[in-house]
Each structure stands twice: as structure tokens, then as C-alpha cells.
Amino acid sequence: MANLGIQSPTRQQPALHLPSSSSSVASGTGSGYEDDDAPLPFPAALPRSDFLAPNFHPANYLSALPHRHQTLDDLKAELRDRSAAISAELLELVNGNYTAFLSLGNELRGGDERVENVRVAMLGFRRAVEEIKGKVRTRGEEVQGLSGELREVRRGIEVGRKMLELDERVSSLEERLALASLPGKRKTGDGGEEEEDDDDWDADDSEESDEEEDDDVGGLVGSSPAKLAGFAQDFCIVEALADAVGRDAQFVVKAEARMVRCRNTILLDLGTAMKEARKAGKKGQARTVKYLGLYGLLDAQAEAIRTLKSS
Image 1 (cartoon, rainbow, N blue to C red):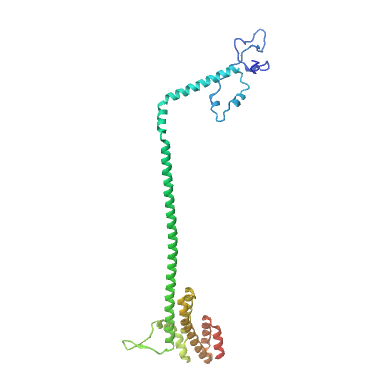
Image 2 (image 1 turned 120 degrees about the horizontal axis):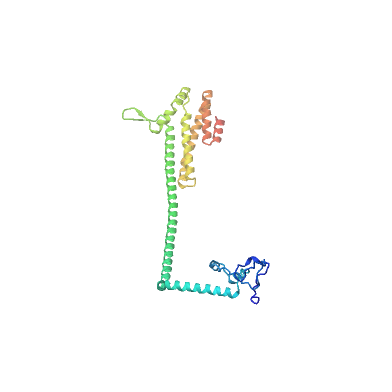
């Protein structure tokens, strides 16, 4: 055993042997040591689980058995027996599943064609998906374009409505200013009673009746502050509509001359009423203050100063 590189247990390791008939200790002598020729303890079989480890390596496994008391020949014989047992198990497994192995070969025959068919089908499916994505993308762009056009149409409709309102208000203001120059002009109805020439005067007359009565008592015949305030407010609304439509719009540019005439007419009536109120002295002070406020509403402070100086 010395030539095989395996050392026999020494007398300092008495706990590594099993009792046998040849290694019995004499009771009369009282000796506790083994003979040099005593046989080694029979080692346990190598566990099969050690060979099934994922990181199994033969050299490392053998080097991890330094304390296994077994000769090299015995170890080789055990490994041969283990290999033969595994081969027998494998042969038995193959014999038991021989028919299944044959059918597996038949099933695998033509597998390349099936895989190719699946690959072609997948390529076709991918191409169809890309086509659908392209169509969806195109439709999305079309929808965005149509949405933009719809917004532009709505904006145009809104601008058109404001233009119509601007024209109506300018026409109404022109008509009211023309009627204001003829305060006594009325027409006769079917019942012989006098009616207003314009229905829009009804609301203004009802609101201004109290102030006009007070002014008539004072002898002032000029336009009342309430009536001129109505003109000024209507003109401010016209200005706001023109700004909303856009001063550079062709419609607003054409209506600008009419708006200027309306403003000048209001300022003319306002100047005449201001001079009359100034001449009335203390009786016209309240009117004068109101007229000055209307100048500020029309953003015509320079005209107010000029009127005050001239009166």
C-alpha cells in the first residue's frame, strides 16, 4: 500500500477502525493498540448525489477524499461498478421507451419545413401590422389636419358673427345719431297717435325720461347726459368689436370711416351740450360733470379741454 501512496493508520489514530476477528485485543495483556497487518475499515459507498451536482469535476472530487480509507484498486472497482450500473439503467430506459424514440424521430421529420412555415407566417403578420400602423398614422395625420381646418372654420364663423354684429351696431348708431338731430320727428300710427320712428328709442326714452324732465325745467334743450352716455357706450362696444375682429381686416378698414363719423357726431353733440350747460351756470354744473365723464369714456380728453376753453 506504500507504493500506492495510501498510508495506513498509525497508532495515534485508534478510533478509525472497526473491530474484527483478526484485530481483537487480548484481554490478558490489556493492550489497546492495533496490529500493523490489521485490515482497514470498509468505507461506505460513494453517494450518487455527489455525481449529479451541476459543478461536478472528477479531479476535484477525488482530491476531496483524502481521509477515505480505501485502496485505489477498490476505488476503481467501485467506480466501474457504478458506471456499469448507470449503463444498465440507460439501456433499460432506452429499451422501455424504444417506440417513443422512434415516433419522436418521425415527428421531427419535416420540422424544418414547419419552422419555415411559421417563420413566413410571422413575417407576413409583421408586415400586416406595419401596414396597419402606417394606415393608422396616416389617418391620425388626416384627423389632425381636419381638426385644424375645423378650428379655422369655427374661428372664421366667430369672426363673421362679430363682423355682422359690428355692422348692425354701426348702422344702428348711425340711425340713432341721425334721429337725434331731429328730436321732434315722429310718425302717425293707425290709431292717429304719434309713434316713435325707431323702436330702439323706447328703452332710451324710458331710462332718460326723469333726467330730461328735470333738464326741460331748467330750460336746457341740448341732448341729455343719459342719451349721450348711451351713444358713447354703443360706440365703445363698436370699438371693442373692431378690435376683436382685427383692425387690419378689410371689413374693419372699410367700416373705420363710418365709425369715425359716428364718433365725430357724438363729440359734436357733446360739445354743443357742454357749451349750453356752461352757459346755464350753476344749473348746468351737474350736466357739465357728466359730460366731462363722457369725454373720458370716448378717450377724447383733448376735445374736452378745447371745448372748455371755447366756452
